[in-house]
Amino acid sequence: MGHADGHAHGTPMPRLLPWPSPDGNPCYLVTDDDGSYVSRLADELEATQLATGTEVLGLARMVLDDPASPYTEVRYAGLRLAECLTDALRVAESRGMRSPRTRP
Image 1: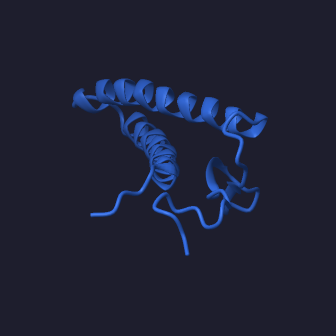
Image 2: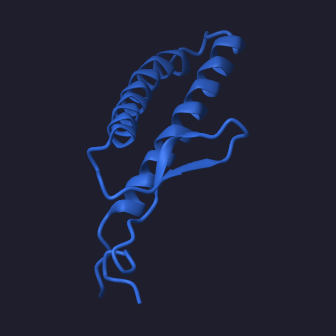
């Protein structure tokens, strides 16, 4: 039977990593050491992805707010925003999987 935090018999929950496998599938890390090399690398990449998303959003707003922006610039902004949203959703999912679960 599992505990309230989702761990069963001391087995750590897998962490969804902020990068896909070479074939596009999710990658997971199973460790009870949040300070491991791969954990720290994942933390750093998540922070970079979120910062990049903020920057891309600001730049995209300038393009999208200008009705004279060329189609290619608007399309490029949309593609970059989709990439950043994909990253942000993966970070949110990973953090949600690691947050403690409370019972009602």
